[in-house]
Image (cartoon, rainbow, N blue to C red):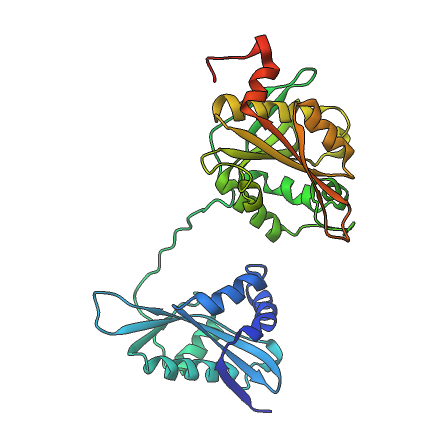
Length: 347
């Protein structure tokens, strides 16, 4: 069958993901490719098809500058599956892309290839491209996934507990804990999937998103990382609607990923440290936290720290729990619970 070229469509996401995995290894996700195809106006992706199969792709970036009255385009990616090479697919992709961009006032095309990739160099020469004397310099800039902070909390009775700022260096631990269905059984409500396990991409999305509006901490007990926790600005509209718009409402979430440290009272101590930080240092008005009816340990943890049950909601089924419990602790309740032990200088 002859090779056909066209502009990529949203329906091509699965095929493009597979081709990119072959070409670049793990570097993107289906969700990101879909978003790029629909939103990235600077790039156009072309695909080569044989029958109903997509066998190659070409990515072209359009560059505009105030310095030049015409535009130029850069061919950033060109890949054809091995079994379809030397059948004209690569050349057809480049010809199609060039004709496509000529109609958009593009008068020059450029690309980069490896210094020792002689096969590619020969191919590009046949396509009319010539090497230049320019040298490319590259600098990689690290953009953190987790937004960190500079707060460290110290506490613990029988054990030395330190809450350290959570950062990207802790991602391997987060991957491990969030891949364990037994851990997620207790930390993740809203599902009846007893085999739930999060991929690294999902973990990055969770902590990258939460950390933008939260103090996220790594929990260390006697110098061993055992879990994570956070004090987050309330993110649920239905909960915020329960309070005045000026009320500072936060939530606390926690995961002890090292199962050898379960049932030792450490979670209660960690929550107590976060409560003190919330009211003393962040001057929070209300802590509004959650757990489901099947998680008795979590219920006891909130109760031991002075929280009261404010609301019980039916959960749509099927789920692990039948009810979601809302536990709250106000600033006034916190002050009253401390009685003579309150530190008014910190308040």
